Length: 219
Image 1 (cartoon, rainbow, N blue to C red):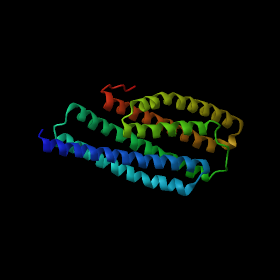
Image 2 (tube, rainbow, N blue to C red):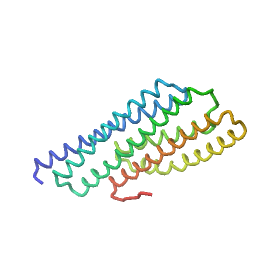
Image 3 (tube, rainbow, N blue to C red):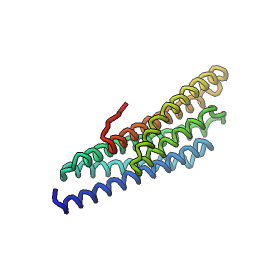
């Protein structure tokens, strides 16, 4: 590859990187707003999150097309090839997390039409753990920080534990008071999506580690 071609290729990679960071920043906004909307059962905010999902979808499609074009038109080095193929995986997981923000928002709207009930005891802890994973994942991509990526992978166990605790609590609540079954089912769906968000954050952290080190540690 000539010097000019290499410079053009580096510029394309930089543009690709910036678009992934933009996608991550939109995801971070949706995640934060979803958490606020769930805390207050804010229907209008939930609707905005659902509408914003299209923006994430469009960015994913644009980045995917650019990755394919680079692979088809250029002759990337092994390290560049690793980054491009990993980005294609990362943007899929970012898009899925955004989908799950929208899915939770749908259940926020459903909860708004039901009598108010007490949220599960560990819901706040689960949300905070998941939120930190998502934010740290985005930061680890921006900074190419494999220590932060490793911390994200380790944090997934805590989210899984909160998920199990909340499932047990909701099961007990529904047995004691059948009148709150509809709300409890909504919260069960919410925590299912929160757990999936954490799983996708873990996937991204694994691909970031692959970009930086070349070690594929998919679990």
